[in-house]
Image (cartoon, rainbow, N blue to C red; front, side, top):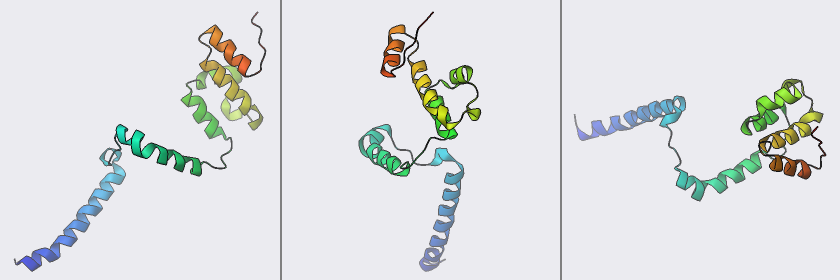
Amino acid sequence: MTYKSRRRRQPHRDRTRLRANAQRSASDPSDRTEIRPANLRGRYRKRLLRLLVQATHGFQWTPGLIHLLLEELYVEDDIIALLGAMHTANERRIPQMVAVAIALRHSWRVDDFYGIVRRLNVTTHVT
């Protein structure tokens, strides 16, 4: 085999290898290049957040968004126990759900709970 013939076959092998790597990367998320935490904080975080701000412009409250919020606040089960199933809640109840979710996060200490209640401009009386 001469140098030229090997050289001609090389691009074909490279394309095949690239295709195989792309397919493996698409199916295996662990194979993707990861951004190290130091780089995320330093270089990428602000850019990623700005892209998120642009992508979420015009968002409105949806059941999926409220579900995500409650899940992230770790209060979803408590909200369901207090207010009922979320899939039956209409859009008018979303502010109530958000207020109760915030209060739930601060309900472990009485002074913290009453501080949130005051900030929400709600009066409560414990009997």
